[in-house]
Image (tube, rainbow, N blue to C red):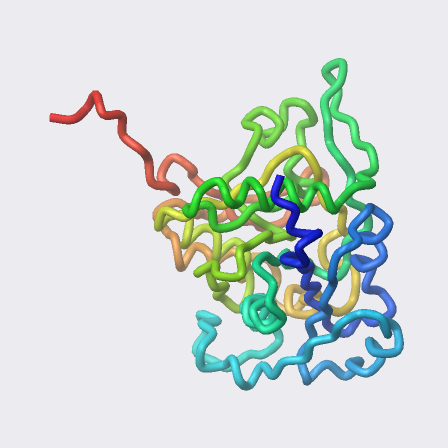
Length: 288
């Protein structure tokens, strides 16, 4: 197995904004067995910037300027708007390269647990992961099985709606990445859009032939959407998920539409028609 952790080739970069005392991802990673490097990525317009230095004196804190990224970041909006995470997402590649890492994992700052998911006696269970170093190594090893694999990700709670009959559990993988992007530093994917930048990235690049995978073995837990102040919460509260969804529809109208998502409390969400989303490999028996 390729041991990226032992070679100091791997880093987790946590995107932070205005939550210096509620950056739960750092503690979560350590509790679940990650011993590798962590970099906190902040922008120079964060009013709580210096509180991060006090709260995390042992971590590397990298500060970047959104102004420097304006002209090379497509937010898909005619008005300049810096209140979004797309700048930080793209900056992660430059930061990883600056420090000499070959692989990086982009994470948000509010993850609370990282449990394994498994099926036993026709029921879906969870248990705490305690060896994240080995987990990250395994994902990096898979990433390197093909140059066409652009990124891999841990699952999210919504992927398991339906239990053992959930879409992810039945299919064994989904062609998407959200929440925890494990990349090569040399990856060509760049994020775009004022909102929904993660979905925009894997949908546009996926339709062009790049591969993005989410697996059911392990997942990340986060607070309920838009329940914690800071991050992108204020942006979403200001315009709602309807506008958020339409950024992806503008990019991929041939296979993305608007739908209602939820159980008891519904909200607008994007819906994929996977039949038309990704390139297909046609069997050689159809060759004329």
